[in-house]
Length: 211
Image 1 (tube, rainbow, N blue to C red):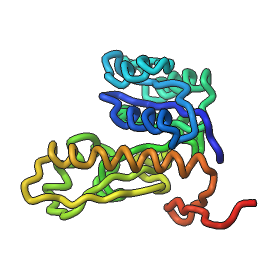
Image 2: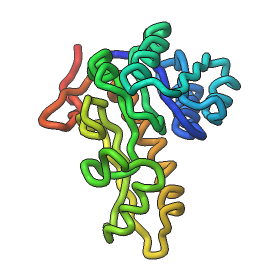
Image 3: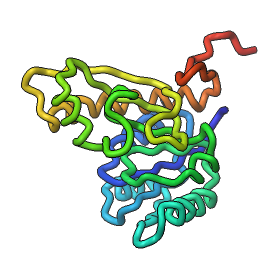
Image 4: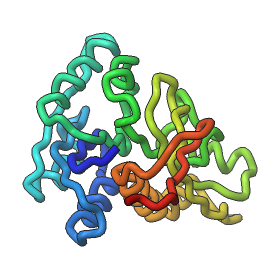
C-alpha cells in the first residue's frame, strides 16, 4: 500500500507509541506520525506525543452510542488523512463504520497469540491472567488488521515468549512489552512497504523481486 503518515489511537502510557517514535528518529522507520488520538485527557501517551510536537486529539465517550462515538473518531481522523491507523492500547470498541471507512488501513496490537485469548473482554492484564490460568507454556503478541469482528482480522505478525513458572500476570506483561514494541515496528515497516498479500487470515511477505 505504501504509507508515510500514521495516526495512533491510545488510551494509556503509550509505550508502543514511544517505540515507533524512537524507530522513526533512528531512521529505521520511514514515516511520520500525523496525530495521536486518545479517549482520555490524562493519557501519558498524549504527553509523549506533545513532547515531540505531534498533534494530539481527545475524543471522550460520554453518553453517546458506540456508532455515534465512532463517527466522532472518524471525523477527527479525516482531518489528518492518515495512510495507516495504529491502535496501540486503545481501550474503546469502535463500531463497524471504523473498519469499513479504512479497509486494511487499521492495525491493532494484542497481547496474546491470536486467535487464543482474544475477542470481547480480553484486554490488558485480563489477557495475561487468562494465559496463566490456562496452563499455556508460551504466550506472545499479535499485530493484525482490524476488521468488523473484534481481534479477528488478518494476522500480520506474531512473536512468542515462554511462560515462566513464577510468572504473574504483571510479570508476563512486563516481559512481553519489549517484544510487542519490536513486533509493532516491524509490522508497520512491512505494511508500509506494500510488499505483502493476504492468504486465508494471514499476511504473507512478498519476497518476489520488484523492478
